[in-house]
Length: 531
Image (cartoon, rainbow, N blue to C red; front, side):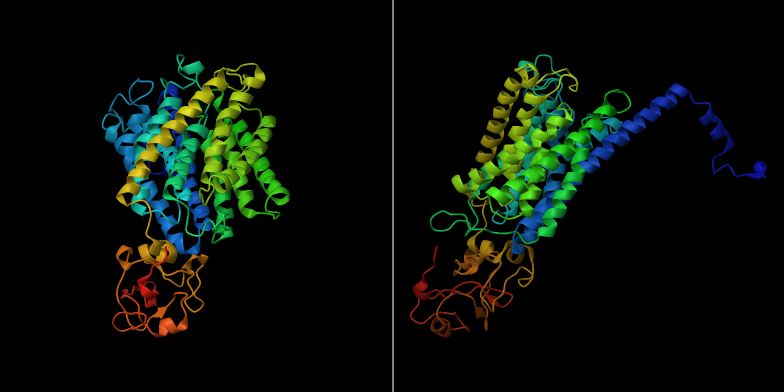
């Protein structure tokens, strides 16, 4: 029976050739396969963070803008991938210059070995990193920003802002790289991107949110914040948990040569422990403090954002900070998040719907400083020691590098957003913001968007005012037999001529705009249009 056993489809000569392969060559091939799979696994895990961000942002905005925020996240991944292929990767890795791009080898991958598994897997992992930085911005500018403006911003971030910073910190010759013996003060420790990724995204998010302005109704007449709760707490929680799971791949991806580096596997194993402890301590601390010192409630959003701020805080030092001190990093990260969230909203009057700056920007600053304080020379690959271990060099390099990254990201993004604002492409018009981007820009159903014409209410209480001229709206047409939703006296509505002009008695002619049979414009007495 054994003599008749089939050979699994392989000819005898093929099996014989396989058995005669040099063992050393077979080991090298296996090592290459393992290292490639490791990079691909980490890259896929990092790119899965896009799912978490999309769920978190969708649950955090009002129902009338959920299609808009989902589309922005999808197109962000598309645009950033194309820009990374065209230019971004080249700026990050090509040439030997310590500060600026000096070669075009990776432009369109023309000069790269596309048959090299390590080369292509590294490209994909770098792209997934970059996509994380670009998607942070969408949450801060949600519910009032043009899709076009956000896509332009994504292209600039992916093609220029982020890869330049990544070059400074991670290129072997970067002026802030710990791998560069000539780096400033020996370089800064940023294992997986508290500074290079999260601080870049957070700084741009704050600038963008400040320039685009707050959502209508976010502040009352005396400047006090008005709550605007999200549409789905379940999506917020699921998004945060997806991000937590994917963050393990994000942080362990720095251990790239798994078979060739004896420290890679122990480092990766320790990283998942420090990542877990920091996120858990930050999530509990943020929720607990908000309960007893803040909102006096057990806030789901504070718990979720607390977990994320702990993850951001430990990302730079996850490989070099001992597990015991990772708890401290998380607790301090929660304090930084709560304080900066209040600073941005209450003091600076900047409307950041997802607390993107507080989570990624402020905690990115703390995460950059954490290894400069707590890095252990035992765990650090280059033997760098933090301030608590007797050396101040890392702290000096981290401080200078952090300020350089903030200045670079904020200045370029400010020029970009101010230019878009000047051209009229940054913020949607009043009608789109009040009715909702889903209905007027993305073909959404007005009833699904939470609009109730019988009660003259929308999920956002800002629907209680007449709207602006139809010439600035996405869709407009005249109609008959419509239900006017303005908070005007019944007598005024009765005087409107529904057939030809919908004009109030004694009023200047004001055209009617409707969407699917619901009046959303006109009918203002004496032609007045409230601001």
